[in-house]
Length: 159
Image (cartoon, rainbow, N blue to C red):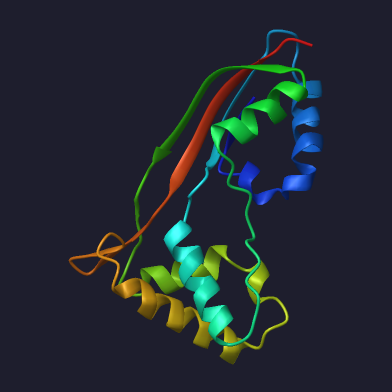
């Protein structure tokens, strides 16, 4: 079974159930290979959003689950799988166009904006992008990059 960029969308409380479903779908010796957002994924972006929210008296709830290897491997193994490989690595990702960062936020970070009007959402995004503009790691020569960190694992069903 293969999964790419999906598991970090599942709430942390539901991870054990999701992994149990994966294990149940595998035969003994079957493999689960996946990559998802790992600890620190988008950290600068989410920090800028949290600051923009806080400046307006609002709470920013992290909408993703970005675990470390040490946090996730025990969950995988508790589901009856044996982790055979695990990597956490930086993967800066180029965003398209001059509004790449704002576009990325609008596309992927929806939950914290639920219930807010479009005008306030645009204001929060603009404030976060302005904050991030000073980060030379995310805006280089006019090109935006997302500070992705990926968690890649391979596990085998043993129980």
